[in-house]
Length: 158
Image (cartoon, rainbow, N blue to C red):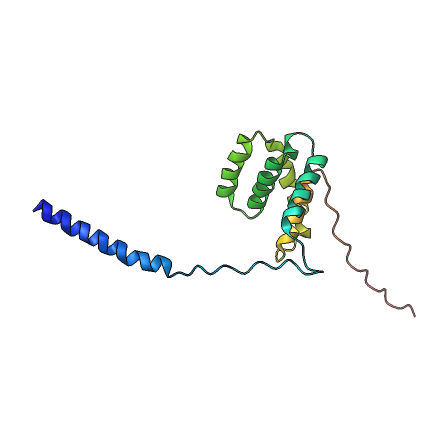
């Protein structure tokens, strides 16, 4: 009985394998067309910009908070805190601490972000990311007062 069971299992495995081979080769091996470089006037690649941001942070921030891994994780934690994703923020904060990054810099950067919250456009992701980067570079920046309302024209005298 067990010999027959082994033959049936082996036959089914062979049949499945034989059916799988043509499907694997049928997916097509056509090469992808090469990506076109951005035309003049278009946005350049983001990678050099990120490297520049990390270099700027390393020049502006003293100590371990300026290390690229601390900048990357710290800005991500501040972003997650702003978006009320506390569980993910705390998981990232554990990594931030494991790299030896100063937790006080997260607190100061988040405080700065809260103080500048009225200047963030919720529809533009770059607005939030730019403000987080600015607060990471200089967390002691003071919030600018809101613009004064336009003065009402006084009634004509007469």
